[in-house]
Length: 310
Ligand code: ACO
Image (cartoon, rainbow, N blue to C red):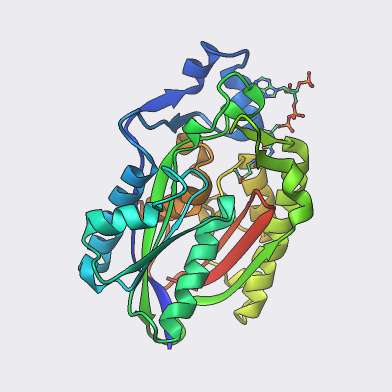
């Protein structure tokens, strides 16, 4: 039995904050942000929207796309580093709002690689026959842990959510291969500090990301029994356009075969890969039956990659 993404969805807050808006509140420039990161604007949630609100809306969209009802879901996994509070979990909060009365629910945390961790966990539960449908959500309100006086980090992040219903698919489709990894010795390069803000050594994270994204992408392609020439589309974590480009070049892919939506959303951590995927399905860049590689990295340090026949 194989498991795959049978429905996907996303939600981003309406409020757009441009680089020009940031120029007004900190010593930065649109030119610096664009050329160093590729980001032009990001979505920032209002005071009346928390992570669970973003998660709920993305989950609703994925359930609708899957054509199932919430009470068919056996497990809800929400990946976030910005839960509304440590408990009750965001997963429990949306379980109630969705009416997913038969679902177990828990939050997972693997920072920006979280969506990869969630999808892989879901795959195993579905393939084991434990649950018919697992709802995987990546949701972040990073703006609440952003230090808006620190230009090194504040310009990078945005808020948003993505979701997928993982269920049974025919053999040869769905999640074909994956790799998950962690290196706790790199935790000092990206963490939440004593003021609850994101703290980061950008250069170290950059070096790690460039190396790891390329390696993990190549590993899952090989594990799935393919070569890089077979890949139709790459969806890398949206942290920096230069990191995205490095991963693309490692796979020898042209620019139109890579998801690059960072200019519109910035880095939305666990929501980033799923949000990019929905956008590329909606605009027709990802087609039915495509061989897709998803690859992410994040604080922990963590990483994860998936080869998927959509
Ligand atoms: N505006 C203007 N100048 C800035 C800004 C800014 N927003 N931010 C930094 N600078 C300055 C720095 O102070 C530095 O000035 P100095 O040379 O006088 O000291 C200069 O720009 C260059 O800084 P660098 O750090 O060398 O810039 P770099 O080219 O490395 O880009 C960046 C920095 C964008 C952070 C890059 O290192 C990066 O993207 N790293 C990866 C970060 C990442 O992916 N983080 C998320 C991980 S995922 C997760 O789990 C959340």
